Image 1 (tube, rainbow, N blue to C red):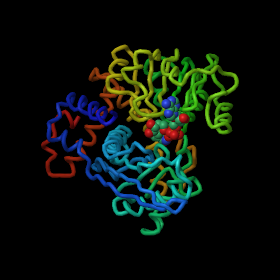
Image 2 (cartoon, rainbow, N blue to C red):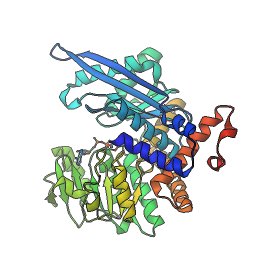
Image 3 (cartoon, protein in one colour):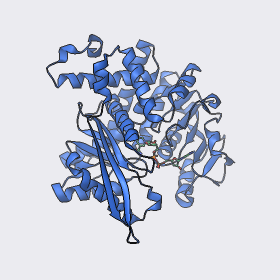
Length: 419
Ligand code: NAD
């Protein structure tokens, strides 16, 4: 299960830092866990019953930040694990936030728009006291989008007045940021570009396979292709397609908008969705769901680079199998940090009531991602550890320093955490 993986990765880095048990407990325990009962009316006059969650993991470095997921499998443990991942991700990107996650255990594909609206706004009414622009700022995640974020802003503002900074990932027409929609994909491209440069390679020389062609996968594919990378295989829930001469990503985007999935795209051969993981490409980008690569299929991976665009796409064992085989894995808390980074820019714009031009967003994101990559890669090289352990080490140091600096106990911090 994914929640165990996050703790395993955390503990590996904590071992490297020789972190004491007390600090481990403090850093692993969520600050606040909220569970609410969301009862709404269905379109047919019946009642709908769901559970909503918000887990605020750690707020030492700033207000909590993290997505809202609408998915039938969401539960408290899962939300807690994803919230913890957000704490480490915001620390790696060095943006002034803590980590949170939440959502509702519903299946939006089975709900009408009015039912979804009622569930969302009821959830906001139930958690409104524990979120807010200086407390906890939700964002989109699986099955939530700009439209849902707009509803959240509107509902929250009914109680607290005009509050665009309560949520990010809003529509650009409703105080959203230019460049937010593509931000995670852009960050994935930037992390890969930096990593390739590190190894004396370049985007123009690599072939890339992408699992998942939603928000993150499609924008990452487009931006990598624009910089000369060759996208040779793509899959989504409808199946997979491949073309070793490179897929035309602009045409594929049009196709997916029209048909709803990649399957049947002309100028490509059809493959099984699972084949993308094992595809003969230099780079593999899992951009769909958790645990796409486990001990079952890690041995089939042919790529030399794996970029975790999704959250938790590799199990801990799969990560170890790949790194032992010499594969470079760019971990999720670094690779997909572009989304939360531009969420931070959106929140900053909302607070200042000042809109940035798109070029500014793009340039600032470029700075944050390249700096984050360098910080992690330098630590990995210096300490002879893999990129994931290095990312967790960097994040743990930053969060631990903030935790103790808030109290009169900074002297308790081991010397290696002050470096
Ligand atoms: P999305 O819903 O837009 O896209 C998901 C894609 O995965 C879809 O194309 C879907 O068809 C595909 N998919 C689902 N199951 C699949 C399977 N078994 N095989 C192949 N493809 C499959 O979601 P998204 O926003 O692109 O998020 C993708 C991942 O990235 C998630 O893990 C999410 O948590 C993570 N993430 C997203 C953001 C963001 O800003 N959207 C930020 C950070 C991390």
